[in-house]
Length: 292
Image (tube, rainbow, N blue to C red):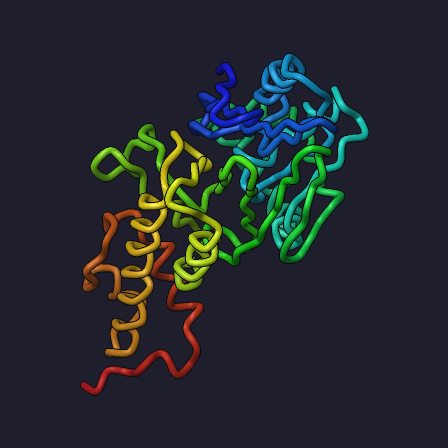
């Protein structure tokens, strides 16, 4: 899909696969591509479109390790062979640990529409990793990479372009209206999958909120840009989820029955991983055995 300029020299193109956003930030010294789509074949036309924007690609940034964000890097390396690939250090470790197994599993799934593409995809490991903050100098502007904490995954990062008051939030913020069963009232539920961190996610979004002004444009990993109020609403909903896990555990409700007994801010059928992960993250003192 074509790139749309959402702020001065910041372009976003939602992709048909997973409605994932590929973003480009341009400066005098070149362009930074943020996320690359889900396979080499899916990313190849994206790289072609990026080549039509003003400047050369001087960096690729991966917001987290999941396939729809990280598996298309090889298409950019094919066109810009020396381009560095940036990621937070935990995301790089997660890609190394789970990426190839995920690719092979999806490629072998007869129900996976993109199986052949995934079978032909070669994963590219990030070669520029950081812990908390990194800065990319584009000459007339800087691009900040910030790891606000764990949430959707352990290695999420957000990209801040301060001169235009814009943040690329990755999957720490969700909006997509194409999420199907993961949609409530037309807005997607945050991706609470098997590697999420539901107890940490609210405080992680508190850090993100500290980066935002009332006028900040926030581009989520999927869907159209949103504002600070949208981010705050999702933070509060995730806070309710985290508090419900803590309350149930403190009341002696075990993880196997918590999903059925809790009052959740999101549809129950989407929360099995989140509840399990929440219980696993509790300290020993956060759980009580039933008295009966």
